[in-house]
Image (cartoon, rainbow, N blue to C red):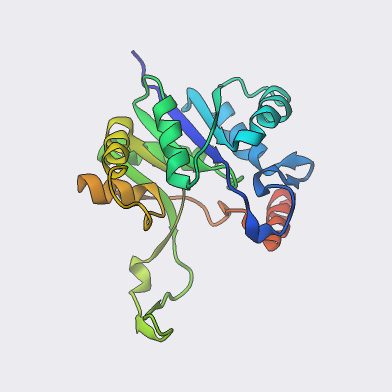
Length: 230
């Protein structure tokens, strides 16, 4: 059987920092919802065979009719409700996967994932079993203490800002999520942490793009518009 790669696209965020009544993944950039762009990348990529879209319970009908059907995203095999936290939505997506070898977990609010990023990530995950997309930090990073003073300055050469997709062997990420759900998950911020903590597996880094931004604040929409114009 040929390799089967599934993209889990997370679109259940509330986007409170956007200060908009419309969830950030449904806001428009040049006439299309933010979510459209990443779904189109996965739809057009020969590397992806299946897409699972995870959204809020109240947005399922909208996603099916106004995004999946409207734009012909035929690889979307399921539109399912997410959970209270991001890791709950990821787990719902993992439980929906069928016969996949590798799973790509992607934030629907990152519209500028590209075929080149997918190629680099999948090549790396085949070597290592676990891979996160990111970019070397352009800025010096400071770690603070609890009182707001600089505690440490990491070597910038070793600092990456992490993006999505995060890509894993399905068996590895499923094992990690099954395990951690029996424990305190309050400090979990991404899927790589789950794998690191529960399996001890090393997570490789693969280069993404400085344009692979996450739409979080109103300023990000302006930046996204500028990227699309160029």
